[in-house]
Length: 187
Image (tube, rainbow, N blue to C red; front, side, top):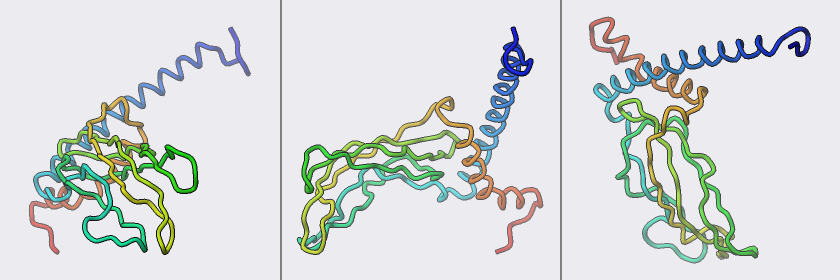
């Protein structure tokens, strides 16, 4: 059966199968590189992988009513990861009015790589308030818990895998070059 310009459904199916196979091969190659780079960095530059926060909330200490308090990441008891993309949250109003309470919603789960090359992302749960302050309105009473979880490779887009490989390669390349030359890197 013919489709447009003499291209058959069979041609399209064959093209789709070929493209899927190429993508699977590229993903497998990139995953191997990511695992190797991550392992090299874990041994030679372990501080590349930082403990991640499990809480985002108002800063500790004194806060007057003139300005909204600053927010900060806290409780760095999460997994040790390399950041490819930071996670983001949005604030969804839970009541009407200019000043209102809100709940946190995940705007972007971020992309992180562990020492063994596994990918991680986050989920967030929490709330805060948009309030009046003497200087200007702002958020306060923020308490967001951050939950870390490993991602299945099937959940990670190919372009995200490419970006992760590039980031790891840039960090690991001096160590790889040093190994190939058989001498310590010169600072």
